[in-house]
Length: 95
Image (cartoon, rainbow, N blue to C red; front, side, top):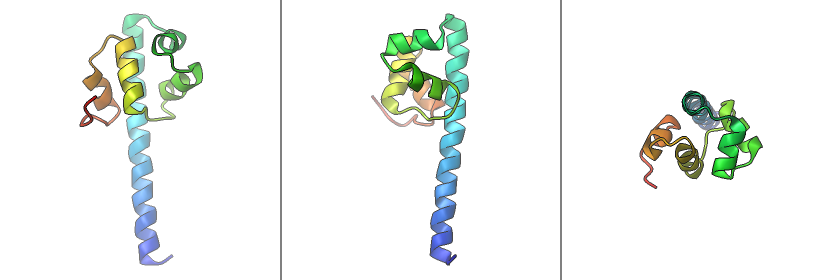
């Protein structure tokens, strides 16, 4: 592997790792507030109009939510949108 390919590969690995970390952080945030609000994944899916599969993927930390999904989930859990964006590592995005 040449130096350029190695650098690109390393940068992609860092990006993937960053997304995985934020996906897990958001999952923990969402689970915490769902417990407080006594909401199930199905309740969140109904409230957000996102599919149950999408909610499950986010819930289990397998996917970092898009900013719009952060907003929808925050509203379902009656939490500030900015809190959800920050939990997903998207804190600088204003909706």
